[in-house]
Length: 88
Image (cartoon, rainbow, N blue to C red; front, side, top):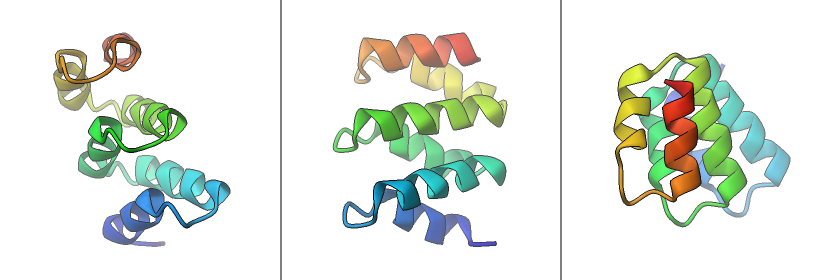
């Protein structure tokens, strides 16, 4: 199993294939790497589907503290804030 750091680097690597990045985000959720998932959600430069996937991963981890903070984060798009609120 890869480390959270390695998985995060793969997830954010714009040169990596989409499927590889998706797998890395899923693996971050499996190991409850909530900090890395939260960073993906808040990072403005990521494709929306990766941000939503990371947000759903936080829901699977039951990361209520992170989800509450994201739901209240006015810098996030409304759809992500609403989804974070639904997941917490």
